[in-house]
Length: 176
Image (tube, rainbow, N blue to C red; front, top):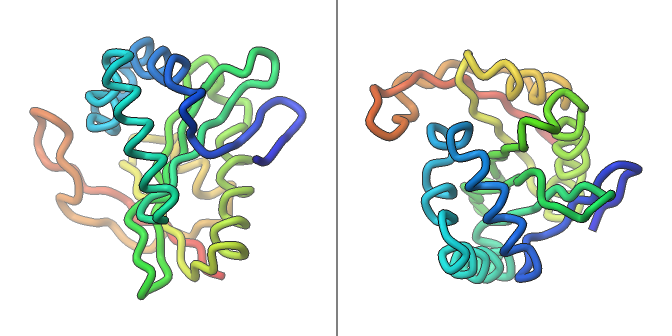
């Protein structure tokens, strides 16, 4: 667990089921395009329970790491950060993240990505971290830039949101 004055960052656990479900359901409209799988797997408490069990197993096996951002005041899950697409041969991983809009603009996600970047590079031994964001997602691009990720290139037709046309995405990387 990593603690700051305002929030904690910790691996997703079974204690987070209700709070995770609340975060996803109450922000469904915000998360539907860029986190559709996570959203769809958390629309009910029962689904969130299965999701958490699955993600805890993936965390243990280091196939994918999912962290929660919890507000210190009430220990509520207000954000998620994945380290996904882990390639242990290339020593590379990709960040994906979301935060409740009530907590946007406070610098929490930038601080979280900085702290988890240190963890990923120093503790896990990764050599390259990636953030892939759409050019219209100014908040995500600001997080990448605030955390010293460098724009590499535009990935053509990289991501297709549900029921929409493919989107070009911007690739940012941070190296050890």
